[in-house]
Image (tube, rainbow, N blue to C red; front, side, top):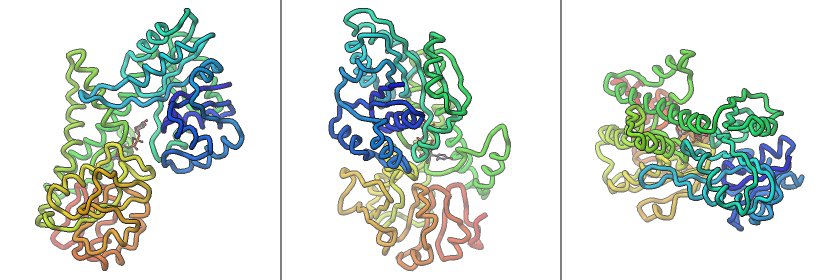
Amino acid sequence: MNILIMGTGYVGVTTGLLFAELGHQVTGLDPDREKVNTLSEGLLTFYEPGLDRILWKHVRAGSIRFTTDASAAIRDHSIIFICVGTPSREDGSADLRYMGQAATQIGQHTKEYKLVVMKSTVPVGTCEQLTHIIREAQPAPISFDVVSNPEFLREGNAWHDALHPDRIVIGALHASAAVQVRQLYDPLDSPVLVTTPRTAELMKYAANAFLATKISFINEISRLCEVIDVPVTEVSAALGMDHRIGPHFLNAGLGYGGSCFPKDIQALLHIAAGHDLTLGILEQADHVNRTQIPHLLRTWEQAIGSFHGKTIAVLGLSFKPDTDDLREAPALKLISLLAARETAIRVHDPVATLPSTLRSSQIQQFGSIEETLAQCDAVILCSEWPTYKEADWARLHSLMRDHYCFDGRNMLDGNRMAALGFHYYGVGIVQSREGRML
Ligand code: UDX
């Protein structure tokens, strides 16, 4: 099939490449000429392990191409996936401006039947809104279907998740449209759920909200662990062995960031508020996440005495490893809070760059872990890049002035770090008087 992908960000490019890999002919449409030129050369505009190779392969094979010409692209394709961004507005609601622009363009350039598939995460009822906008923009009535087909990709694992989805959700009002979308994914061996667009839209929000809640749950338990001398890592290991709970998303840490969880929880709360409903569990999940970094800084400050005037190394800027995405990255929030304590901050990330708004004589980025930690009083680990786990911590110890290690992702072996001479503090992990981790 010939498939048009509107929006060539993270979701659009990954979805387009999946369809190219499954044997379809794909066109990526984006108004950003520079982005289109870069992608047309087979180069990714964001960091995602393995995806650069796949893009290169399909650009060379001609199975994916990119364009800025909306009218020709829409005219020439009967299957259109909308993969545009849906950022948060000030009030937490989803900003559907780009979705509206895409729908208007589809309506204006439609000459024959179109199957329009909504891939971006959008509030319940958006497919109905999309239908309305397309119809209004059509110069003459032409039939089309709108289907919801939410993505569940994790950054850093996008290609794996694209090829092996836990489920494919198809929300359609007409069976014929659902069948068409289902056929596009035919080679994949994943369960397919066919439902209404509204249900599909809520399924995506509910999945993200549940995962975020799981993280806030274990972070809240970790606060209790800190005061009653219980290691949260052992508690989550036991929780995870219960099949009803499952082992994933139970790592206590600095909290969740990224382009989805914080935004989607806000959007869900906003949707509920519009129906005079309070979603207390989600409000609390959001509250725990917002207060997790200030809480940890207070706890760690008790250990080090004061951050004031100290030199601190921050390892890992992106909201999680294997991505350069800084959206809602816990490290950035932590850096701002440290900066307010007049701390000198030296940062490192394998791929992400410190935003220019944060760069100053007080906050500097370095190219190696060794340079970053030189003469520091403490190191704070913010995302679990393997390079930090595998680092030569004995050597790093010798480069530091003082030896506090605050592990914001519980990624290092605390006992080993203590044996190397570090004052090691994790999240929900306390150090006993003998220096061993409890
Ligand atoms: C998420 C969803 O997983 C994905 O299905 C959806 O389509 C998009 O949003 P992503 O934002 O890429 O994916 O990252 P994810 O791996 O879910 O992690 C989100 C945040 O939670 C990260 O900041 C991560 O560090 C944090 N996290 C994750 C924890 O703090 N603890 C955990 O146990 C797991």
